[in-house]
Image (cartoon, rainbow, N blue to C red):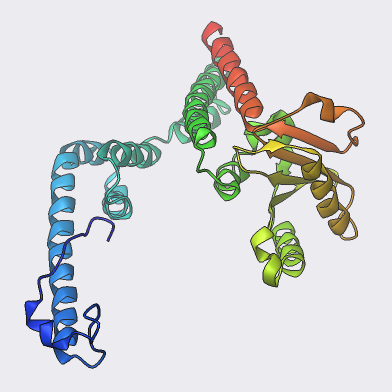
Length: 314
């Protein structure tokens, strides 16, 4: 609908105007008939445009899709075709390069199953000799290293997109929350054993529904509650990427923690924003951390680049 614009000349309705001349009488049968016609006509044109666009996109991508499908086992091809169709429908209107990238990722996942092949070799080697087993294990290591390098490259691309998101002045808390909630590795290796589960999500939702009801709903914070190994909890508060943190943000985050601590403890707090005055760290409570989005992105990027360098040297 964002692509639809235009105007309708309806001189035949001039007798159905209100006295002021700026509106149409509510009981105008002509206006009702015109509305039905416009809706029908617009839908018809949208359907034609949609079918044409999808057909053209499919035609442009079909040769590559067919080539990749031919490499799949026969039992996977039907599922792959359905997946390709779903991707083109789901991402209709997006740049074709983006659609192509998504299709390639899905086909890669369907096409490659190297781990299964190597593990079968290991299993077979266990019943043969030590040399064969050593060779199979070495192959597993090479494959694992390749997968780590590939994942590192994908993460660098993710960080580039995340960097673009936080530098956009229109980006709000919810957007960065969505991006980071399932990518906690951005915060560092210590978050590798930290998760957000259904129980914590429900606890947090109930707390915010109770605390920020009615007129206060517009002040509802964007929080993420996580659990660590050993039953230690972390409460992350997302601020707009354009906001510089101040003492009020620390005080507010501590209040959220104090409200939740009767149900979950102990709780550490992290507040994320654009930047903060280092002098705020003086006398900062031990279980409260201030951080900038830029710092975490830069640190994560440096770690990945170091890892890629080590893999290259190896």
